[in-house]
Length: 80
Image (cartoon, rainbow, N blue to C red; front, side):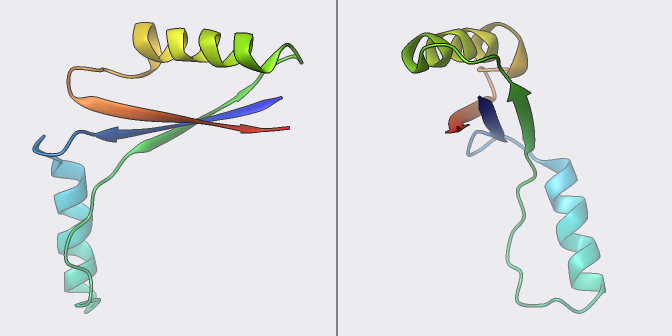
């Protein structure tokens, strides 16, 4: 089972990497871009187990290691 964890900075948290990308895009004349927020994606290949148990384990991984829940939010998607 493939688990995809998307992690983003919470609204209001300064995103210097996003600002750098925005400035670079504007410098390249992509003037339609108004804002950029940079996040990260973590793909986990998990041996097949029960869906609910896997979701619970991945949530625990996010809370304990993968995401800094003080400044980041995360979502978990599953691909079979």
